[in-house]
Image (cartoon, rainbow, N blue to C red; front, top):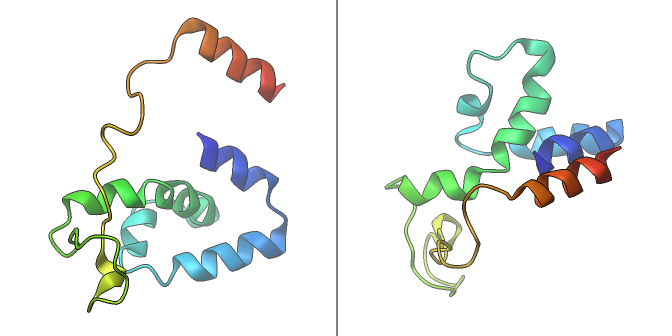
Amino acid sequence: MVAAVAWEKLNPAVKKRAIELLKLNPTYETFIARVPSELQDQVAFVRAATWPDMIKKDPRYTNDGDDNSVPNSSLNIGYRDNLQHRYGRPTPDEISGFIAHQC
């Protein structure tokens, strides 16, 4: 949801650059699979927002710590974040607050 709102607030030049960078992602084609061409940029941007979570289950990526000097450190998934965030359904007050800030 946040990525969708962010996309709408970006100017055309920034959107273009974001898509140029996203196309470098080896899984870019999966972001736009079966998406109409006129929506591919926006959908790719929104789906890419969840890419860090996607790669945690991808065997090509490993957790080799915080050291970015190791070989293939660009394939590092980093730390497990399941205890870093409160997951679950938002409360009615949280939903109302979010909607109020969108108007």
